[in-house]
Image 1 (cartoon, rainbow, N blue to C red):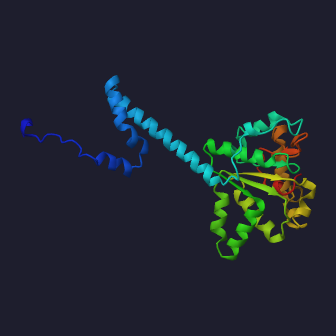
Image 2 (cartoon, rainbow, N blue to C red):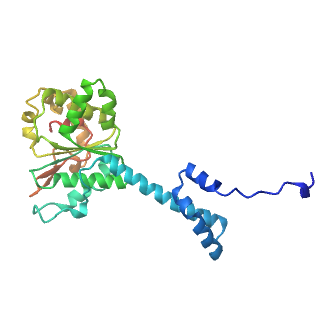
Image 3 (spheres, rainbow, N blue to C red):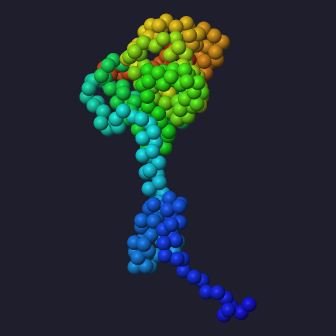
Length: 281
């Protein structure tokens, strides 16, 4: 066919581009392609430069939206940051040790972190701030009090929905269980909590906060015999655990906890054994 007889290229009908952009959920491009087209003509951008500016803006919007969704789905009681933490109270807190946790290496290692300390010293603030930092870095986080987790799972078990409900606590990269020990836990509650910890073993990180010293944990769980079984010293797993621990750096060993004078917080980081979340060596 003679090229002179070829059908001329027709322009896109008005409104089609906006409709396609809405279908693709490209909100930034839909809102800015006209203004950027004018700017591109004035500054003589190439087609690739013009497209690049649109794609860059869309990527930033989607990244911000994803971050907002992660923060919302984390269910933080309030948003806290490390910058808001009062380093002058309590006194003598080891700031570098706390800041080290905010590098989030323990999440990459699928390890666990425990903060112990009295009421009102800032454990929940630091846990929330750490979780918020993890959200900003692209990690899925879930924040909940330990007793709320137990009550939710108990209700799900009664309704025959335990398995799908457990997935809610095993899916995030970081699960923060706040206020462990503020209320007593019966055997049924302990069993449910142990299921969460067991399912997350080497699958994701757990951060615990508690106002109870480790020696008080058996009483906190109503002297449940499960605690004895969970002691790493009482089984063959103990020998593997100790062998694994000897290969760790001193700051990574659970019995060489990161003591924070004044604040009374102990951080047990970079440790994979879920049993030590129940009773330390």
